Length: 396
Image (cartoon, rainbow, N blue to C red; front, side, top):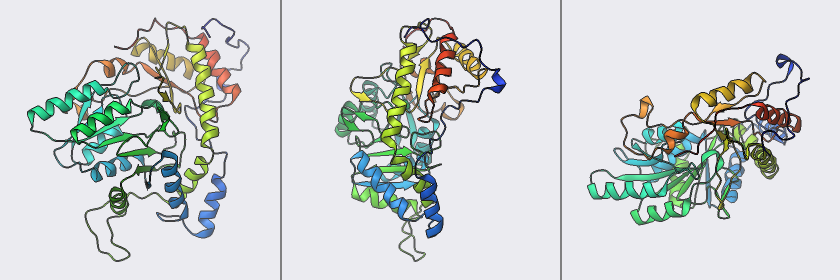
């Protein structure tokens, strides 16, 4: 709906300090979380072993059409392990999108490699296959640095264009890894996110659609990778003896976290339906506006609508919108900033086309948690209808 439609600010609303705060993404804990946690305590399974861990792994493998799932303590450790078992080694380059969360690049560095920042497309805000092709071709021609992997990120839950990326990686004999941290329940051409690559990772942080309070998961079809993932995540210990096969990590998820995650997973369809309905309402309001643009969505993708982002005309307009909403006790935030321009990453190689730079500081994410009530969303929509910014141009 246009900004001057039936959605109006409520002039008789209570003073701001009396209006309950609406968080950006609160956990939706209305399932069997407390019941399963009580079972953990009564059965004395609270650490990094227990039946909920195994069941959570199996359910995630089934959801993504994979043979194996290996639970970890968070999404960053999941990606670190995925890179290690994929064969990434010291001195390698790993292609990653420039517009992503820092954990994507940090996991590459933890694996001893260097991120090669590659731009995203204006049409999906995800890794640009044409630029990936250029990077692979140029590096092959030079022959000095090995590409250890390509990591693609499903931005805000919207899948990347996986078929051309998979084709490029097969041709170059380079592993393809999905950073599907926020994309549980999304799909690409009818196939589930997480099932489109050599391995994929998920996060169950508190702001994710499915949370475990903390936690991550690697899914893959490769038996050897799964065995090594499980071994490395438990200090590479051989059985119960204190004999270790290699330098490992203490990366295992606890049974407590898995209990929460499993209860959440049981309600995934319900939560996805709620989030998609929330996003549909946002897009109805943003459609036709000149000062806000919705995130583009490709016809071949079905996003889980993890986060809903709008583009503003400039970083200053984005901050203006956030401040405007904060005065009404509605939380909003600027989303990712291009990593290549930030201090820790300035010396890493890159191939950019200006899209990540154009998005940086302009994308504002709005509350889209599945527990958002109709009254809360009405408040947000009314507030958005009353805000005016400068005309917003499409990203480069």
